[in-house]
Amino acid sequence: MSKEEVIKKIHKFVKGKDHPMMDDPEILRDPYRTLIGCLLSLRTKDETSLKVSIELFKKARNFKELNKMSLKELEKRIRSVNYYKTKAKRIKDVVKVILKDYNGKVPNDFNELMKLKGVGEKTAAVCMLYGFGVDSYIPVDVNVHRIVNRLGWFKSKSFSESMYKLMDTIDRKYWKWINNDFVIFGKNICVPISPFCSKCVVSKNCKKVGVNKRR
Image (cartoon, rainbow, N blue to C red; front, side, top):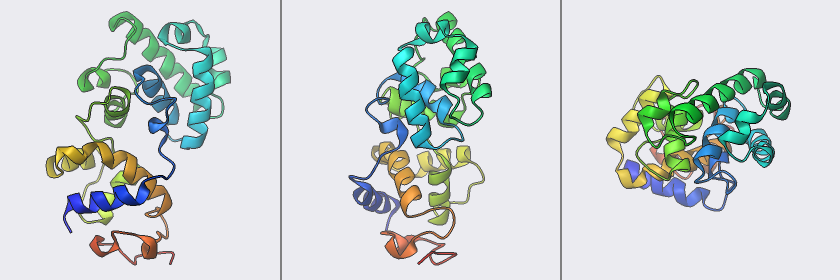
């Protein structure tokens, strides 16, 4: 089975299941919400990040309103996410730069996004795909990284390496599916410890099938 056929199988399997935070209607195709939501979601469960993000956006609908919010108030409003104090400072820094250098708008450019403090390749790719609807990069998180390595598509040591290897080997028309579908698949089937190999629709293609499987 080719990589593209595996992607199609997983895409069909996850259809109708809960989608990742960035695909939520409250976040999708809004660069401001996508960027801030992504910064809040780092090392925090999607369910928590989404709830905190939506509540924050009710009080701060754009960068100007978020800039007016004091650091102390922002910390209070995002307290439920991990490392909330560090994230609050980072968000305030990003907001000031965007207001000053980008006329209050998230830059629609991967390299410009990477210039923002705290924004790495994953966050920049997420903003491009979910914020602007541009499938020019493939966001890679722990789920995507784990699955592609278990499938034996390649060996990569970092999310960044996985992203570029995927972009080099996968037909571009499937790029927009990978993050969304593999995140769902990684949370429900190809979990980190004791994966559900017997329920996996692509187990025949997996190089790690049966290794520490649950059942």
